[in-house]
Image (cartoon, rainbow, N blue to C red; front, side):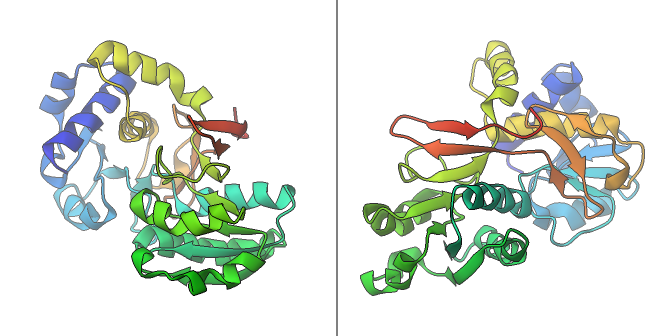
Amino acid sequence: MDATHEAVVARGAALALGVSVETLMTQSTGRQGGSASSLAKAVIGPLRASDITATRAQHPTALLVSLSNDARARPPGVAFVGLGPHESVGRILEYAERRGVRRFSVLGDQSDWSRACTDAAATLAPRLDLDLATSTLVEPFDMTPSDYRELRSVDAVLIPPGGAALKHLAAPLAADGIQLLGTPQWGAGDAPIGGWRSGLDPARWRSLAARHEARFGIPASQLALLAHDAALVARAATSLDPAQIPRVRGATGDLEFEQSGAAWRGLAVLEVRADDHAVIEAASNI
């Protein structure tokens, strides 16, 4: 984790633990692994799943509370507080089904996130009585008009990534009025107006964001919110088994952990509008 990310994590964790950033950084036992720890028994981090092996070697007896959303490796003794693909995709598909979507496709880029979301969609579609017509992972800027022909025959298209990939992939479908579905990766400025996405409910994190800005003079990023909740998880943990962590009421939701270490928190559904992303269905655990 670079210095900028480490500072963001430290600020969020400090708010959760009621200590100063300086105190937290001084007590940190995980700086080399790209993390900050709130307790000797737990390490907040690492940010990326690819750093877990190195961090585990440095802290063999600590619970790692990773900010990653990638729990596919399922190493023991790791709790993942990132917004994972199964909950992100499941929430938006469940909502879309209730709004009349029956047949959908997935269109993503070559990122690990799109791959994980595509796998999640394939697993979840039969459970939700949805027909997954096609799953396509492409280089976004290589798409041609003919590549969109089959996508225009479905009720909705799920586009997992955000940023430039989302903007490029979504434009032709949005122009045709196809209902687009997304994940928490969709950010301001790139998301198609009228699209539905899963994401954190502002009703949960607005208070913490105000505290963060009052204390540090800058808005709280999603990474800071996750770091805050990771610190609460670290404090609540009593063993290396994520499934034994009691429910943690955090700024991003009420976190509960599977045996794999993946967190479920209850996500909202938001609609992309010209000036913001507005909640159209609140998180179920508000």
